[in-house]
Image 1: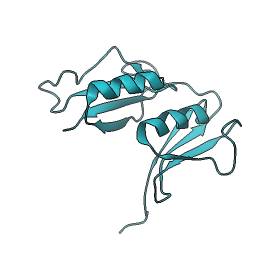
Image 2: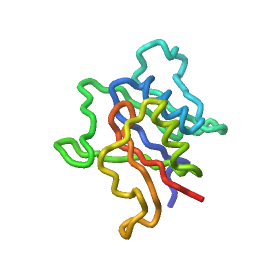
Image 3: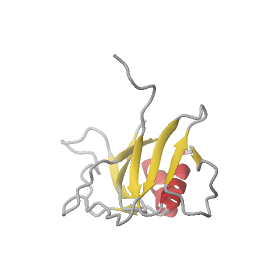
Amino acid sequence: MKLADHFYVALDCQNAVELAQFYAQITGLRIETFGASLDEKIGWIELRDEQDIPKLAFQEIENYVAPTWPTGNVPQQAHLDFAVKDLLKSEAEVLKLGATKTQFQPGTPKNDNYSTEFIVYLDPAGHPFCLIQRD
């Protein structure tokens, strides 16, 4: 039995505008602010596709604490994966957008535990995400 027409992930953060702009540049999705200006403080923002379907959302919360991946007191809870055709070119782009490459890299280069090469980064709010090499 199908209950939902679609689903998407919402990330908690300190600055919803900043994080929405970061991921909009990676995905090419449109930012939906529900009538607010990007210059305003906005508590909820969505990224939508060309059919106006939400794909990713950002919720501003008080006292946000960034995940401490790969270890620490605050687990990652979730992470996003983005399939790319050119891993190194894509890395240069996400770093320019404000991502940080993590010191611990379990999937680079490809090894016995992982069949696909990937690189782990932190977005501007500290959420882990991966770029995954896809041919």
